[in-house]
Length: 244
Ligand code: UDP
View (cartoon, helix red, strand yellow):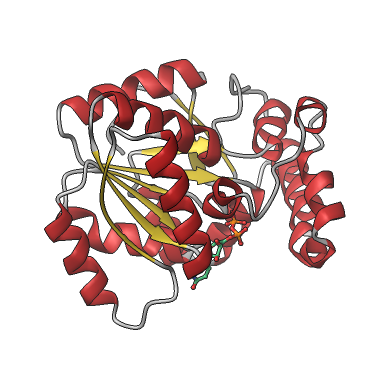
């Protein structure tokens, strides 16, 4: 991890203690100096996955910035007595970086999601961010990983957004990060939201910390994935009171 932020450890991962503004300012500086950076936006599911898989934990620890995506991380940090300022979500960071890339004519590579979703993302980006250069793209259902990596290298991107879901996207970035001195970020389902395929929760739900409940109502199939939340909270309380 290479950054100037203090961190807060939540069940084994070190989350940066930064506001959205501070984080974005740092990323803009990183981009202007052509630094090679790896961002993980982690939620409770990712914390549990890292606890269960040492290789995944190591991969996340190799990132430059691990941010609190999800209210569960903010709550967990507070319960453990070291609060974090606010959520730094993959989606919000993606949108802010697209604006920055547009303003400075940066080169952006889009990797991931279903082919139709990716196409919609590219159309939307071309319309809304006309000065940004789409230096390349590839949907997330490729067969030849090495070929995709080569494509990214040739594209010489300033930003690489990887929407393969976790843990795939983090493993991919850690493996290929050296092919381009860029800002690499795993963005999970963000392309689906950007394309309009999936709606993000309305502001009221987000403000009331109920984005997870909104997603559950819209996609009941996520129920089993969401069982991670109570399990995560249990581990947070165990850490607080039993210290392990
Ligand atoms: N995805 C992909 N390739 C794969 C598996 C998943 O491109 O092999 C994409 C999928 O189409 C979706 C995203 O990865 O756009 C994962 O979305 P999900 O909501 O599961 O991600 P989360 O944000 O919960 O990690």
